[in-house]
Image (cartoon, rainbow, N blue to C red; front, side, top):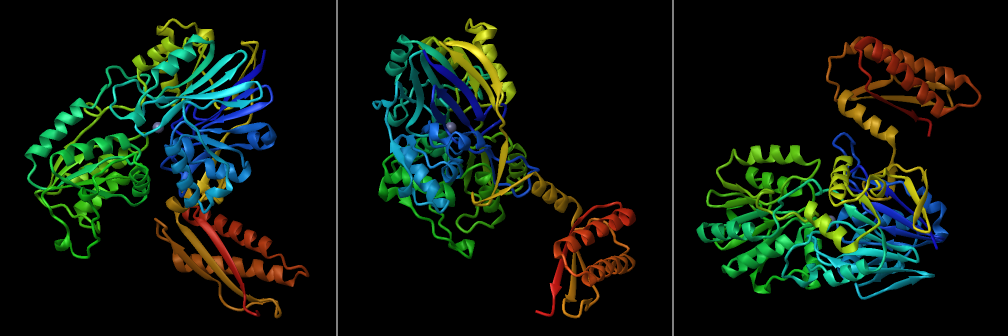
Length: 557
Ligand SMILES: [Zn+2]
């Protein structure tokens, strides 16, 4: 008999920042630690991660972070987490290779951290709880599902998977392991929801193969293919088919190349060495490589594949400039949040003299479970409870409908929000409670965080511009020594400038001089007062509120 808690710190009701937690008595097991990409109006925010203060508070009880696969929405919050909680990380060989690279990119020596390579034949013991794994099929090699096995049954975390045919060993599902688990008691399954609403998804690569082979046969010049770097299985497919037709391969995409290099180095991606071309950067496009047998794979994350293609069309890329004999295949269907950029990019591409073909979701195989995949998973594992995870609320609701369709009752399908804890005693739900969760914004490297206030300021900057005020004073003479200087940037309206400048200068001079006569000269207070008064004046005269920055320079130093 165990006390079990299941909850999410991120990943429910959203796309990304996956982080789920299972507590069994005194043991805490963390499942994945990913990022979410920011919304378009989060100025300067590079990533959003989950608030982990609950974990920090309870860090003595944490057994480790168990990673399902190496995609950013599952691993990229690890540098941040490890800085606060230096716990153990468990993942397959390829996943750990990617995590090592991620830590290096964040200036963290991975040798200082406890990274453990697991495989599906390993069983990890933590008191009377053990953790096991089974291989799943996804778009990146060595993806696994994680099973936390307790005296009251197993909790199976199965995210990002499909049941589909694949010839590649590193992508194969271990059906035997799943059915074995199903023979025992599965208390709950945490399964992804993103694809739950899709029916009749493309189950295999035959349409892709057929369409791409046609192009290989008919194309007289270079073939340029855009794809996401996370889609290693698709990249492999393109390479295999191209090489089989005697073509050479070049790969574009600086960041993505690192992942691909790791994949090549560790034999997860194979390209015959003699077929791999390293494109040299050029100043003048007439020196670019135009070999007719060249296939250029343009990779990256999020918007990068599209942005590369646009640069190539505009002649701004240093490796490739489109020529009329090029065939461009867009094999990177937009992701949630990237639709606008994708459409804008395509509109640009169509203006150029280049032959474009789009492979969309009617041709490309999805790498996320659809309705049938989920039903098959339920049938094999026979869980008592189903917890829809990973996805917006509408996706989670779609999975609720799938579970209903599979015969589950409302009480057995647990639609949760981030921070909502379901507690089991003896396999029965006894309590529901809440813990604080939220978003942490990450700016640039993972070292500096930004908060709502900073975002707000950036939003104002982009909409209203900035007014910068510099005042020189002499602390020894206790006076302002030059007329305050006003500079504006990005203001979208006309300033009645001379009059306004004069007024602002007068206000600033008065505040500084009032401050200077006081015994204790409080620089911060004076700055804030000037900024507030100037803003009031701007609002009165222009009806706008730009960001006001005041700098006070002591010229006596
Ligand atoms: Zn994934």
